[in-house]
Image 1 (cartoon, rainbow, N blue to C red):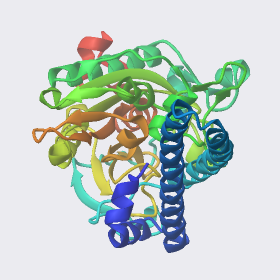
Image 2: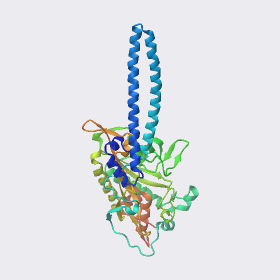
Image 3: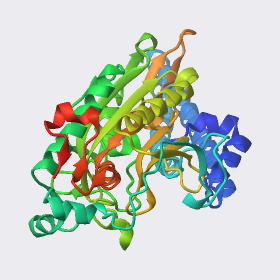
Image 4: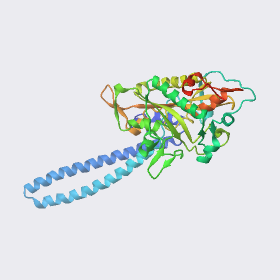
Length: 424
């Protein structure tokens, strides 16, 4: 959530940055927020004046009774009754205005960094780097879903039988590949100084609100209404919420966590060839890195996280490129995001496997995640996260890019975790 003080002090800047995200009616929305804040402050001033008058009258009544002026004291008590009624009415008005103000603030997306490219869709994202060599497999190359069937390592029909489309069953060497990737990613993160967390797979509403998944405008989260829980779309949600309503010490920065979890997304509206096989699932495994950082160093930290993700892909031998997302493709909560996409040789397309984002104070303001700076002032921290990495499309690219007539060759870095060199 954007800080109200930030909106008040930098109104023009916030409006211009929100325009990068193509926020509709942004001037009117900001104006409504400022007017509601003015109304809230006016009501507070009136309420303070009423309380001050009540306190003054209470003292007068005491003095009048001591002086034996009972009739005058009783007249003053009538005025006190009127003031109490007025105070109650003002309190109700204040509450209504504050609720409306908060609703409008919480519905406003994060203001992107001024360097975020302008654009309306993923077509306007900017490639900032390309790495590795795309394999040339020839005309007989199979897409990963055919490879999964050929080697009996992922069963999509069985998953459909047990649950539904988008819930595959991993079998044999396919299951071991999943486990190997998870362990490899977790070990690499631990070596980079990330502290491992094993988070719950369900969160409450306050946690969803804290990281910006709620209000769930697109209906992408699986809800458990009887208990008021939500299945997590990413480990970002429970791990970041460790610090909800927490004041951290400045000397703790950077706070670095990594966590593996299953992720659950309804992916409403997804259809066609882009959802075939492992391309888009409702349940999938992912290793997530989360950082809480000092505001002065968060963009340096973002670069470090990018290097970490790129290093994983380099070690796996997967060709990839990095995209700087434009305003029309960046998420509701993000101030800046870089996507990593790997090359799928059989499908002849790029597949997104990671988003690395800086949320600045947006999540911290919702969660009340603060620290005391060197000047003694309480400030909001910055939060960042990134996929390191999401498994399904990594598996798809590994299977497709490494296929040979004799089987699928596994990357050397995975072999100690796998216990085998190839899938055949």
